[in-house]
Length: 323
View 1 (cartoon, one colour):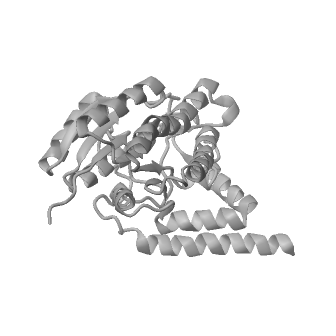
View 2: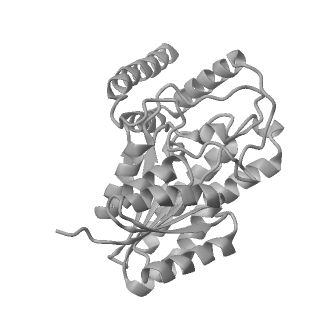
């Protein structure tokens, strides 16, 4: 049976999770509209996707600019006659103490990570309503449930996204064939942290448990076939959501302690605004080199051990506090 071809829009497709998502949809021979601020990286990705059987349109877009996103939707509609799936994925990261990080940095994180997703939804929903169908997928991350110390702007955007999406789901309930889906992955092995704005003065590394972004890409493709309101991606994400839901203060404290301890020991580095205002000329691969590329379930045994350690520590802290 021939696979059904759909028109799929993916923002932030030039590297990391977005690149992995594009390649996953390309295997289905879908018509892909890949978007980011780095056109040359998109063109390189397009060659890979076309080799897998997809038709590809590259569009240079800054999701923080609403008019740029409106243009993206119009180009996607013209390319595919209708828009079947829209994946909000473009995102940036800034790390540093809130009061010593320039406010324009936090502003830009909000513009990209929160308003960028709202721009995408606002641009595509008129098309979905006109055709009475469509799937909007938001790649939110575990940051939508777990606050990140030294990443206040990032946390504000991710928590805001979760609220925005929940409101949108309720509003769209009369439209039976329009779906809003949220993905909540744990830390990913992508170049994202290499692109981050860094005001800590220290070399940054991801948390000790990172997932292959291919696993997230597979989950998002699955949502495009069988939509559901939300999907946690990885045991660590499930654990952290549960931990913060049950013991928020202790979980916040534990995360802050881990990050603070790391920053005290990390090597010094100059501050940088990263890719917040302009795309960078490096780090356009799927993987960042932090984990085990190509093996989506390779961390399962480590996650199981880590989950037990973290949960045991939290319960022990709670017990000591009650004594």
